[in-house]
Image 1 (cartoon, rainbow, N blue to C red):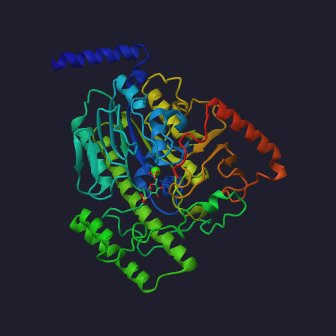
Image 2: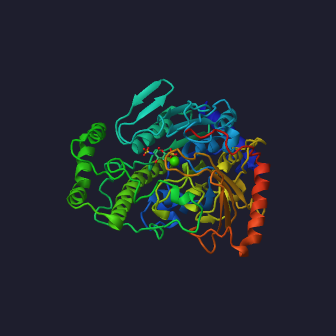
Image 3: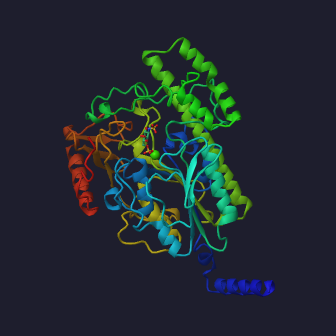
Length: 515
Ligand code: SGN
Ligand code: CA
């Protein structure tokens, strides 16, 4: 029996070779592993040249694949980004505008549903943040809302379950368990492995909670930005490392016995508690004895913030390594496209900030690394503008599934194959809807970016900005009113109007702000 079926396979393979189609058939439906973290800035990945940390496992994907240097998002915030990834459509088409009012309509077309139809096994594990239950997945276990770092609760089709341990490890365990024992190995798979980390409030795992102790992490040039020469939007935002960090949640200045502190400890194992207490003890005692003020406080806050953020990333990186090792050990690496990305970028002290939302580079851009053995040239770097808007189209293309006309991005598969040529977008539209009074007070805005320029309209303030990224990569001086940029400005205004029309943006106030 066995012999006969082997013989059939050999004969089929031989005839495929004879027809010259073997290579194509073999990679027709590769597996897709999408590893997606929450708020992971490209500035904190060593493959992108981080001067703050090392991410050896994430770097493997870059070294063995392609690094995208200008992958941008359509709307730099969690739920909206995830809805864009699933649908290949902007917020105004998929209906998920902001984390406040929106709820994902799971009956709409998504790429996992289309892959399922094409014979894929689909799974979704970890951070979801779209309010309604996932649809289009053969298997799913997701965190409610933001989820918890320790002893996370998971929502499953069978109900809620608390899983002991640290969320990044537990999410990976669940994904590996599905890969190993629960999926149908006869079918190609598409797995979305979505980490909560390194989202605020940046609670490190027990193995990394003492990393960087005694070290000084470099500060960005613009930590003390004064927000001059721009619109009012930047100065109005409440996400400054200096002024808007909560002592307990964000800075881990944990007074013994406080309700919040006890609650956190209760969620940790005894070993984790011990590691935590030891890790912050010395620095916290010094702080309470002599609290820093003025600029010293900003330096202190930055060090505490960035170290916790990087510690969370260290666990993400370890767990990326576990998954890559699993693929190697089970003969899956060669036929699996591995993607690493994040729902948006993040400010690591640039402009004095943490958080995201703005169309300025650090949060507009997001990491994108793709490994596809035998297809993507190892160590390649791509500078053209690609986006989370393109992910759905790309996954469908990779799977050989037709891309629906109403998707608004483009497949980057030809770029991965180095077959795209020069024909690619030269401008990209952005739209952020979660304005004040939402957390962090970032005014609503839309804009257009090209490889060199960026035009932004903060429409509730009725103020504009124009940046020349070549001369001013840190976006510190708006040249919107500079006569020498009149021509550039007119051209960008034209592109903006054209994109808004083409993408059918009909309202800037689709879900009126809560008062
Ligand atoms: C929470 C965070 C904010 C963050 C939003 C959105 N506060 O409200 O700092 O901007 O999520 O983040 S916290 O109390 O949870 O720390 S997103 O990634 O979900 O869009
Ligand atoms: Ca996020």
